[in-house]
Amino acid sequence: MKQVLATVLSNSEVLPDIHLLCSPAPEIASESMPGQFVMVRTSEDHDPLLRRPLAIHRVSPLASPIQLALLFSVVGRGTKWLAQCKEGDEIDLLGPLGHGFRVQSRHLLLVAGGIGIAPLVALAENELARGAHVTLILGAPTQDQLYPAHLLPPGIELLVATEDGSDGQKGMATDLLANFTGKADQVFACGPVAMYEVMSSQTSIKGRSVQVSMEARMGCGFGVCLGCAIETRQGMKLVCQDGPVFELEDIIWRGEKGGD
Amino acid sequence: MNLSVELAPYNKRGLQLKNPVMTASGTAGYGMEYAELVDIERLGAIVSKAITLKPRCGNPQIRLAETASGLLNSIGLQNVGVDTLIKEKAPIWSTWGVPVIVNIAGESIAEYGELAHRLEGVAGVSGIEINVSCPNVAMGGMEFGKSPEIAAAVTEAVKSRTTLPVMVKLTPNVTDITEIARAVVEAGADAISLINTLTGMIIDVSTRKPLLGSVSGGLSGPAIKPIALYMVYQVSQAVDVPIIGCGGIASADDALEFIMAGATAIQMGTATMVNPNAPLEVVEGLERFMDSEGINDIAELVGVARLP
Ligand SMILES: Cc1cc2nc3c(=O)[nH]c(=O)nc-3n(C[C@H](O)[C@H](O)[C@H](O)COP(=O)(O)OP(=O)(O)OC[C@H]3O[C@@H](n4cnc5c(N)ncnc54)[C@H](O)[C@@H]3O)c2cc1C
Ligand SMILES: Cc1cc2nc3c(=O)[nH]c(=O)nc-3n(C[C@H](O)[C@H](O)[C@H](O)COP(=O)(O)O)c2cc1C
Ligand code: FES
Image (cartoon, rainbow over all chains, first blue to last red; front, side):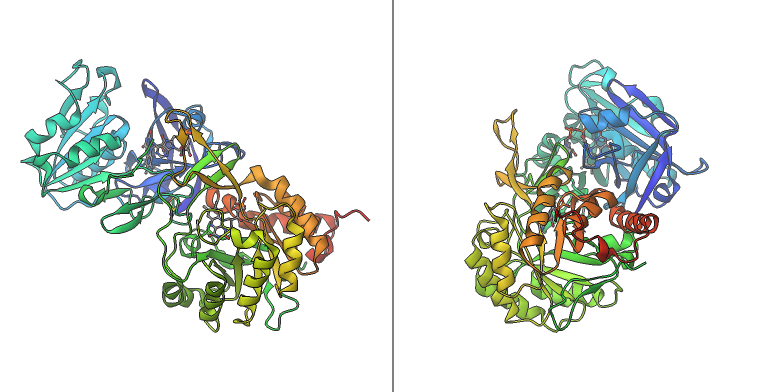
């Protein structure tokens, strides 16, 4: 975990209201694991006050210095500020933070709901490089909100679901899940809380190792403020430090307001 | 150049800090994570998260909400309990070259005394900060700090069970903070820290309900600085023990304002969470200011803003 000032190399709108920001941050990138995140400062003064948590989307180890990529939806003041950063601007990053995905398998099934693709690309890239088989179910409301296939690592098996049927199967990413869980040893998901709730009630998932990346409002991102604590079947856990990746079956949904 | 300050001049053990900058309770945990990020030995002191007799789970989500230059929190004193603190945290603190002050919170006057008693003689603990100002718990907390009689009784209960320097942390959610300050000093407080958070709330217009799981929370950050500063100004003239100023401090200039208002030392909470380096930046900024202004001892600045 380091606090660094990193220079923005590029920052572009790759999808409507979704930005891809690349920056050399070797101190963070070289230590990071898929599923971990960074806390990004999104103002020069005190407003907005808090850093924003963003998943490590991708690490380019071959670039020199090692680059870090973030993929973010512009939803409010902080992300709007970040979207306006230009090449050459400096951003204040704290990371890598949290515990990422715990992989112990040869065939991984990844489930991405919307911007939930962000941490899963890093995971796919790492695991494909290790020779694992990676299947990705990518869901979005419409075709033009789908993460561009050409940015995905080569060798990935891709399945698409759109809510309006403009690409792939019509429906939600979770609708495709039952057909593919049989092949995979482990499932990794990132998306809205509603997606996890659907998953936790699906019978094809029962008894399998399913890891999900959780969200919470974060004050610090490194375990000191206790703002992100959630109740799990293993007791109170900090999303920023014990997570953000948790076993799906450990999450208690009752009273969990989730990441909105 | 002398930045060192004495926080408990009337206590036999004393509490000397190498500089006046501390992290505020609840914003640096037990210091361990923070130690990974910055060189904590360059700080004046670390104040740990409030500890209670038994472990506490804290409040339900949502616990944090951002406001204009501020932060509302309702953590609800989640902590590991004093026994775990003594067994697992204090031994690590005892190896550090920076004093750790333990913030304590009880559900009764007797519990405060018991907490002080358990901490007596524990290596790694350099002082006690009595939290009679937490707005986020149903039992105790801030209610103890709203009445001069009860705040004094808590102070006495703690002082009678410990030889450690004791500071009392006051709540700003009162009509006259100087009245409480006088009462706790009379009861033996070695120092006073102020302020804790201001009670507030936020409503989510989409759900039409309070956003925080516990309805209200405590406001901190730059938004509260002018209030905290004026309270330090008032309290430092009402009592003659050292004052530790806290509330919205994010820069060396902020810290200087508190010192000039009458604070002997300062604490940084929200700023530390957002920018872990901020306390060290303040130490450096104070050094620079003293250097450029030709000031040899930081004590020369304490209370200089007071009008004759
Ligand atoms: C571990 C983690 C990883 C994340 N990774 C990504 C990512 O890779 N890409 C991406 O687009 N988004 C990600 N998010 C969500 C992202 O942090 C929020 O969308 C962002 O903080 C919104 O900030 P804002 O100022 O634009 O919005 P505002 O609505 O103005 O935010 C106001 C406040 O609410 C908090 N907040 C709002 N929405 C969320 C949310 N969904 N989760 C947590 N806090 C929220 C903000 O931190 C802030 O304190 C992640 C969240 C977490 C917890
Ligand atoms: C997340 C959070 C947790 C806190 N926990 C405690 C606590 O356990 N005990 C305490 O006395 N004060 C606690 N406080 C109050 C701070 O120590 C400090 O008094 C207050 O935040 C004002 O200072 P600031 O504006 O620099 O943050 C907490 C504040 C925050 C933001
Ligand atoms: S965000 Fe502060 S403890 Fe998790």
